[in-house]
Image (cartoon, rainbow over all chains, first blue to last red):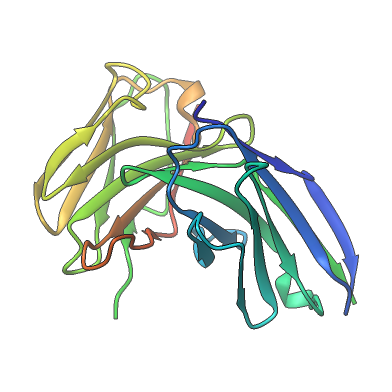
Length: 110
Length: 115
């Protein structure tokens, strides 16, 4: 019930393309869904987050799509750039505690 | 503004030794979290504090692990005795409570290797 499942594990996208990472959860008590970006040797950093009563949130090239009935949410990176190459984690929040997905290693080829 | 500060950045020690990891949260944040990151298990929450009080330590793997937060600006995670399977990157994160949900801000971690 506490798991968040993330896919794919790794993703290679050409520069300028769209990167899509998907997550699914079971526990309907989760009340906030952030995405974190992590570069090698660094800690995860918040990228964008969404509440479950919103179906989409966009910040620049990054968009979260949220499907409450399916208990799924996804991150879309438009016009992907080499600087976006990093590991991305989805997460779900309940009572101040974050449960993280397993991560997606994204590589943007120039 | 200074972010979450962790020390040391790297620690290599032999099995059986005591290890102490340190964290200074962002000033004004009242929640502090310790995580462990491994390839096999990903990012796992070990323990979190609110206003210096441990709220949930259900993620602490066993009695060899202990965490303290003696004041609002300092926390430690101690492993005694250490074992090779404790090798991982340990992150500290902090967050405030001014909004309904505030993001957790992570430090850059301590890479721990137990030989």
